[in-house]
Length: 159
Ligand code: C5P
Ligand code: MG
Image 1 (cartoon, helix red, strand yellow):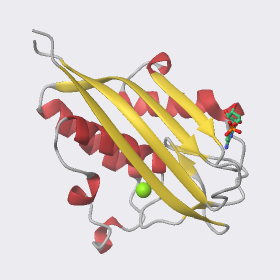
Image 2 (cartoon, protein in one colour):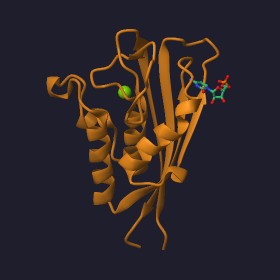
Image 3 (cartoon, protein in one colour):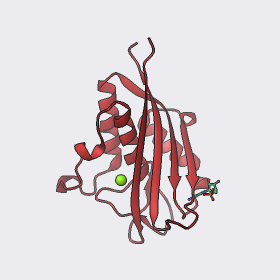
Image 4 (cartoon, protein in one colour):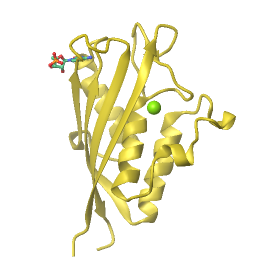
């Protein structure tokens, strides 16, 4: 029998001028602002990590990395994602494809679509063609806000 699971994750952060903008493990060059967060604020990696956990009913990243714990300050979000990938593997599952939507008014990200997909694919050990990256503006409704929504398909490797 084939075994598949679907995961869904979201993340949002306030944007501030003093911060770097990280998305999918990539530092966005020339961004006028970045996510205000306890960690590096990479909303793509946080949402993907939550999607992996949700697909396997393993809770969410806040349970593993509480933002009240000083040890998590400035944490590299790739570390969080790698741990969630390892938790999925412990259940016998690996991600098969990922689809994500970044809602952000500026900067425009279209030119970086391939770079973000490649960075995320490398972290997830997927091909770039298995990582769908879409961008939306908020149409000015949330100019100081970045929002990411992610679905992931997980497949069991040992069936
Ligand atoms: O949100 P909206 O439909 O107006 O987005 C129009 C286009 O702008 C889309 O093709 C999207 O890929 C692109 N876009 C972008 N960078 C963003 C937001 C949207 O390249 N930060
Ligand atoms: Mg976050």
